[in-house]
Image (cartoon, rainbow, N blue to C red; front, side, top):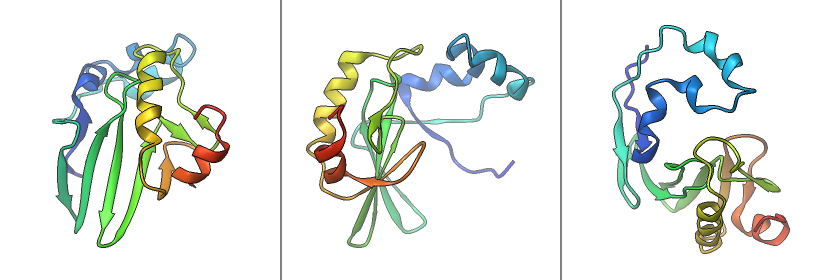
Length: 143
């Protein structure tokens, strides 16, 4: 509808073919009516370390599997300011689920160890309030 480019961690590409089928049995029936007649968009795979320039921003993908196989953190730099969009990997005080289809507890632990090496910048999760890397390292019981 808006004709914008779509980028996705390559291992999650299969999820676009039938989105409801990749959810837990509790959520799939809720999503099914929303994706009736769904057509998957054209997608460009994002690889770990790949950077994109858009709207004057540099966006760098950081592979962070665990919640799903293709989960990514997006490091966004605007001049001297960096922010990280963590999706469903790290939340304020929590982390993403690993018990849903595509989840992997060991991969999540590896991703969280990598998260701990990031600079202390603002994070914007896929759900809930913003936080900072340092705040999560100090207070998040999963890190």
